[in-house]
Length: 185
Image (cartoon, rainbow, N blue to C red; front, top):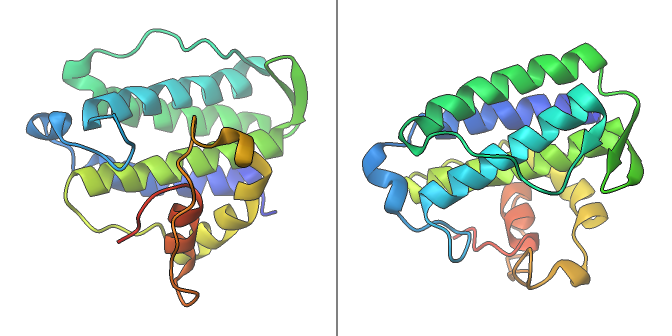
């Protein structure tokens, strides 16, 4: 596994680029996340960034999401939260133990899980904005290696759809997306 903090930083950088594509008109568009439109997905991403912020700041992740940002400025709030989040994680160095639902986990592992969440939803955002914006190859390869640690058969179909078949020649971005139940095509 690569350094979780490094993965999280690269995932946030990628996703910030995808957030630049969002317009108010796009908020009602469908996303690769079934049953969610882009506004719902951005709200979920906001929840994820808040949870990662709690992890860095308090050493604890609660499973109940806090209140969401105002939908009228959700993209601006997400950008600000993502930058603030990186400052919090950088201050801790990604080290230490974080309690997730009462289970202690290494901070590096939590940052890695956060990187998967952030990067893949960054891809979802770009896709909903009708833009082909693959996750960078090196980042996707590292996230693909981590993904089986966080997604098992028990997570399907509730949190993730069934894996999608892709060509054995598919690149790491397409294989990561397929493993997480998204059609990269």
